[in-house]
Length: 209
Image (cartoon, rainbow, N blue to C red; front, side, top):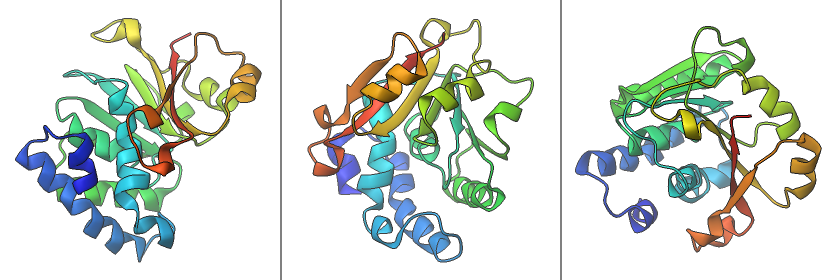
């Protein structure tokens, strides 16, 4: 928890309390559902929570913006971002039902009223549009973008910035080239976080195309 306060020193008491509960909640659920490796559960705040919040170092989600989290797994990056941006709306999706049950339980335990969790594939979502899509490396970009390309709002508070904020690691040059996406911007998380884990981690911003 001290790691989160180190990089986000202006948290409210409520946010500090919510972030502080995550270790116990995820440790308990990880005994029942395999969400995170045994090694990673010991590094939950660095490798999952702070990593998720890397998006917040690049983008600030304003009030009433709608964010779709694709392949959220145990709730990353959606739950940490929902704590940090309580006035934004988060729709967390995953194709594995038991993981969505965990997301719902943790969101309820934290009192997150700005989170909706749904057991569904992104491409199957009907009738709802979003300002942003967030995700953590669930697929290659050439596969991922077609899933969400029709999910963006054409107008609204963030229409001019609508796009994907994708957490990925390593050398992405070949993957971006293969995707044939234009105007892709890379933000290195090592600029914001000094821990070695973030040396190759990036936020990939892909505007609506």
